[in-house]
Image (cartoon, rainbow, N blue to C red; front, side, top):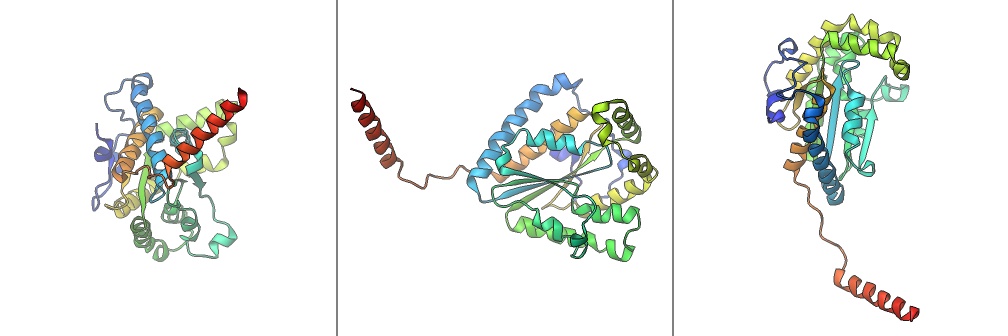
Length: 282
């Protein structure tokens, strides 16, 4: 199954999250059954990211958005663990600092975009400024409503300068979110993830759904598409995201660069050193 085609938000279409099954898992019966495919994509990710890093001509930005407990951290861990950290960076965008608030809303985002040869993963992103600020009425509609076009222009700028942009909305059901919150309460190792805001934010579920639907519909473009990933099953989420990133990198087609030195001359020097070392042992 081509998940890039299946889960992409077609530019110009209207997203209705109520019609997208968050529990979808394709034909896979279980995590164990899907593991060979998951591992195959992890191997491809490792190879493609190595080539991207070596080439140093283009970059990849991966944006992750989701409601609480949908698996942003888990997705970061899955993707990043398949890559060399030397060529990857992860940024989490939380409540803006005073310095950040003193600038335009994209200032802190632009600073974190990947350099050539890098993969950057945004755990939350520029879209917080049309989601949280909208749901909690932190700025007037006259302000946040203009940001969709600014975000599209910003992503166009990145793409025009060699950065491929892919954006994932990890889609879970309301019942699954509640189940995961309970896991956090019941598991001492996860207690640290629980906050007062988790349950308070659930009262805004419908508002967040509406905000996400508009952001997905307005800002999925040919150059920077959105994908809605069914995320009730963590392993299927990882499979779908991995496949889409692999296909994105394959389309970028990074190449191992040619050597910048005279390999024959270096080989001769190495051979001469070996001979000299052997002669010294005699």
